[in-house]
Image (cartoon, rainbow, N blue to C red; front, top):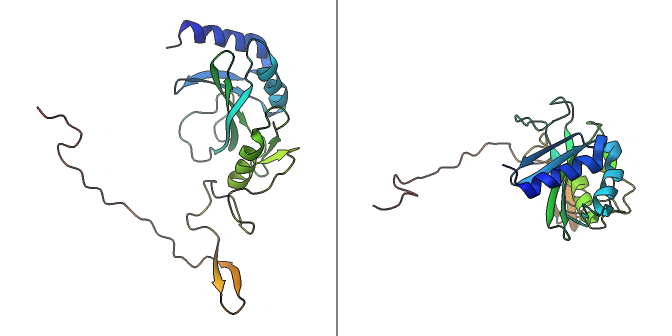
Length: 206
């Protein structure tokens, strides 16, 4: 249920963004807007600078791999056509509003999207993380390189098709007196946790 204040906020977003707004919805207590990647920089600039919006703070940015999603999250698109998306979490300190913005990346094979560092400098490390873990390339990022994995790491570990055991392993070679990389030797296996539940667990005593 959208309260009066939020309803007014939705009307403002629809009026200000106009045709650049592909879809708008409410999930987990926050509004989510969907926009096309071609409009990203224009919309981001509007969200930050427009006096009725003032989303001056980028709280978080993350990549998402939708290749195995079964729920309908692709409003405005055919499910399965777009694999990767970037999600931006925004805060307006002035108006005490939060907004989630989702942008699907056009190319599934080589996902690229514009960097928003110029608009929200805090995007720097967040975009590097999405690049590292999902392989999403951010155009015009000033220092796009891995941030969490090792320099010699191969692949993007948050992609749904990345193996749980990885592709490479490293170990110290006593003869060479350095760390070396080699193909993974761990046998892939599935581990099912053994869970014990008490009959009255979580129930209040009479």
